[in-house]
Length: 456
Image 1 (cartoon, rainbow, N blue to C red):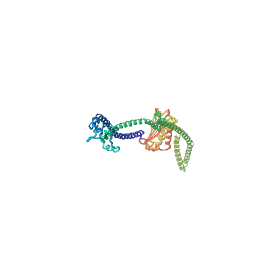
Image 2: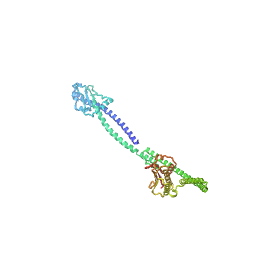
Image 3: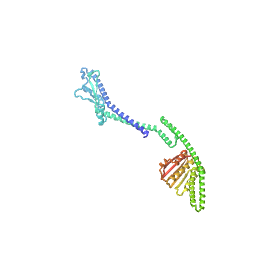
Image 4: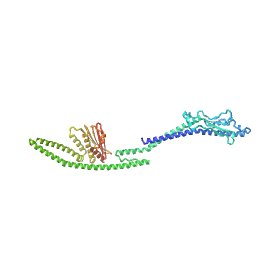
């Protein structure tokens, strides 16, 4: 899972937890706000009755103090304004048949669902009535008792919660969106680091990275840059070592070719001369026909060995590009395979681009790759047609492409994992030249492609 998605998912979990906590707090605060509204209503009504009490005491001093606040006098519109919605207030001592004076409760809030109406009182409890004296200095003035309406309180709490949740949801969505964009923007430079690592995996070690503002990303970028430098240095050292090993091997091949030509070739020539002499002498004697036949067979075997020796010497001697140039040596290579037998598969040679100025290690590597791939296609497959394509790709990335395709079937994966000397040799040569080698499926067979960079 991508890091951005992981961080966004965790952010959404945190937002959900915060939203849940806000919902719980809003529920508790809304439910308890009814208690505060009840206490405030009782206090306001008591304060108003206290003013009425002292006025009656001054104006009607001939009346008894317990009758100073007549029942009808305090049940006015002004008193109703002092009572919060959903709260009922009653004066004590109450007169006969007197009902509490209640604030507006019809149409207050939204009707809550049943589960909310039954769940909230169970967890938060019921609302208690609030008692306030009319006058702290005159106990005989009576008291005010305020009682909240349970149903109205729950409706008000539900409406308050809905309002708070709406705002909280909008804020949570905005925070989640903005934080996700901020996270994506902060982690965007990680893509350039991944791209650089992918290029390094393909052999492009010198991949510059931009400067990062984040200290952590800057440290990662510096580590990647240091790693690319060490990998390039190690690759250059390995390529130089491989080139030196190839030079030593070529020297050994040339020395071996000289030894085979001087020693083994001369001995074969001597054997052939002796066999010819024996065959001539046997032909003159009437009773030595068997000896002449044996000498003839020795001569034939010697000719076959000498032909095999010549092929071996061709492979061991200096490559033709050093003498004829790359283009002429490739034409000579294809012609030599074509002339060996009429039953050989068709070999098509396709040359593109300017190959005249290609020499040195690049030309030798290209020739060896083409030689080894043709040999493998001819000896290890039932191909009827082989295509050898040499193309020079000019431009900033001046490189030489060698591609050999056949229609002889074969398993590309098995061949690419092969540890044969021929395939290992061309891998080493291509790596020493700083190139790349790939083996893949063709239409009806295999395709071996090598890319060799050319020096400017």
